[in-house]
Amino acid sequence: MRAACAIRGRATGTREIDALNPRHLVDRIDAILLTGGSAYGLGAADGVMRWLKERGRGLPVGSAGIVPIVPTAVIFDFDLAPGGKADRWPTADDAYRACTAAGGGDVAEGSVGAGTGATVGKALGPRAAMKGGVGSWAAAGGDIVVGVLVVVNAVGNILDGSGAILAGPRGADGKLVDALAHFARGGAPFGAAGGARNTTLAVVATNATLDRTGLEALAHAAGDALARRIVPYGTLFDGDVVFAVSTAAAAPATPLQAEALAALAVPIAVERAVRLARGLRDIPGLADSGGR
Image: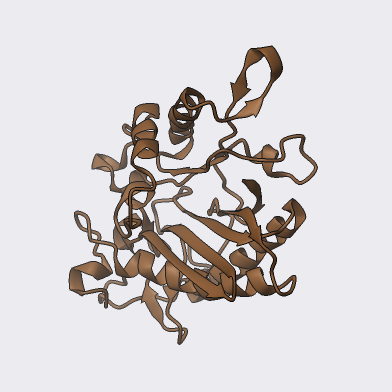
């Protein structure tokens, strides 16, 4: 498919992102991989490439054959590993199996896949966070459909539609803390723990006939929608990346239609990512209490 991206965070872990630039030679991609394991997890893309190559899918490169194009982005999710150690991450074999399982029905949400180790609200440190995860939603207008998949692993708070904190750092009294106010007062990121432990990733897929410049604009529009529900968003400690892809099957009514649909779908996907996330060890999830 045609694809583009918007890099909104400043602590990214990526692979093959250059291929998404509208001025790049490559004009199509074969898959997108979202995974955990920080930079170690980028190697999982080798399994996706192997799966695609076996099926003859990739960029033709003459007598050399084909090269599958697989833009990849990772989250930092070692907080929930035993002892917080970087001693395990998704492998190429894991990603190969994920390709085989893809497209088999409903998309799993919550504490699954790349969202297994995701947490949110880490302003007071990783042990005061809440569980994040994977969320998905779609919106349609006429013939145009926009589907969204997010992996929410943010330093900031997650807000509901009214602007109230849905998930975030837990203070000593058990109440949720306003991360933005904490930082504005000069509060240290992550308490005494330090380090970059965040990233929200998103894929926005549409059937609208958008060129790569239009897809880049769609990715930014989705990033703006993320910023309305994740506060703060795209910080120095977040590796936020938004991918946008198109099957180019239907003409949108206006240049803004797909962007507007993304703005409707993204907030619901973000909420589902935290509402359906189960707690892990001492990190609670909203799904433990019925998503509330």
